[in-house]
Length: 434
Ligand SMILES: Cc1cc2nc3c(=O)[nH]c(=O)nc-3n(C[C@H](O)[C@H](O)[C@H](O)COP(=O)(O)OP(=O)(O)OC[C@H]3O[C@@H](n4cnc5c(N)ncnc54)[C@H](O)[C@@H]3O)c2cc1C
Image 1 (tube, rainbow, N blue to C red):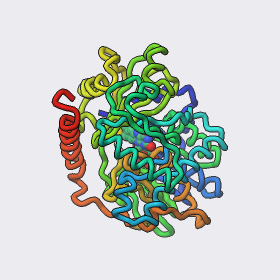
Image 2 (image 1 turned 45 degrees about the vertical axis):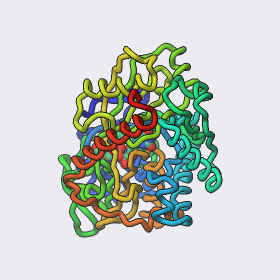
Image 3 (image 1 turned 60 degrees about the vertical axis):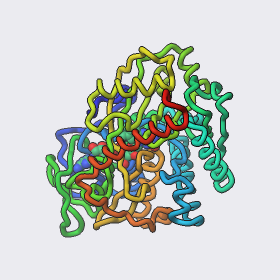
Image 4 (image 1 turned 135 degrees about the vertical axis):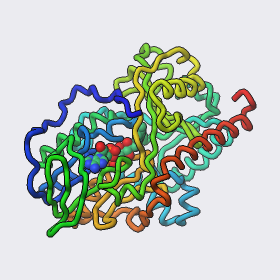
């Protein structure tokens, strides 16, 4: 299932493109993929005076960038502080975690300085604890984040939870004050607008079918003809394939599902999210959810359905998960269901740089809204040889995924095992009816 996300109707103009116009013969840099990564890279390259063409297989932003939850925050690292400390030690852990804050700072500054109309609402996120042990573990992590990075968080007891969320399901949780949300499709359109204004050529419906070395750079084959470029950037992330294999062989694409409720009465919206917060929860396979940017509905997402599930199966699975948290939504219909792909990496970290002779950035492991915009900027600096291109990610090897062609099936099996383990842990902690 791909499905149409609720975000397509923005009221903002879609990028203009003359479908009959031929491709230029040559550009300085060709970017493959017009999501956040490709658009951000193109913006900064074009502003530095380079000729740039962004070739996109579908509509501009057709991939994950127009299909995601739009939830933003420092997106520290999937391993968490304990996992990072065990693997890299204290100095590197702090550097990697700070990169998440730098990405968020850059993201907010870009939106404000450029005046991007994308419904940025920094109202914080409440992460519900499914068990007392989960809440205690969140408290330890929040304490570490406060002491080492100055991050503002708060632990909420179950007795006080109703001030944050219209649910009694959780055993309390944590508030992350630096988190918030955007309208992802609006962000795509605004990045596309400023990249085009800077001089980047955006070419939708132009899949790159092959890339090969050529005198003075590379040649990209497309149904619209051949484009020559001095450099090529792969910004295809979880949608990478044979033509973009340097990235494809380093990520595991995982299908993630999203549903939205039909419009809810304003009083009910206010009861579900009294402070307009974003939401997440503990667990290996968890649900994330948020009010739509216009505050009229709720969006629920996660890897809850089986890979390949259709819209109806997806709505049924989410129906069960949603009413467990919000019994008051029993009988509420879901009117949109869609899926998109996230790109996981062997070390749970995004990467950028030159690999197998091509520039690339990706592998955001499901937290890519701020990081793709940020790493796109860093990658452009790197290509330009400008200062300020370095990141704490630079010395992490971007390994290939073992048995990559089978990785999607492997990830699907792992998700099912995780879901089973979550249910077992919940029963053990809260009894058989949990
Ligand atoms: C359902 C879902 C929910 C998510 N929720 C969140 C969230 O709440 N917060 C968060 O931080 N992150 C979230 N993410 C992750 C985030 O959306 C991604 O990390 C981010 O959008 C990646 O941007 P990108 O530009 O690298 O890739 P994409 O937006 O996927 O763009 C890649 C593009 O490359 C194009 N392409 C591929 N191959 C070719 C080719 N050969 N020729 C031409 N074009 C090609 C594709 O068509 C696609 O448009 C979510 C992802 C999904 C799927």
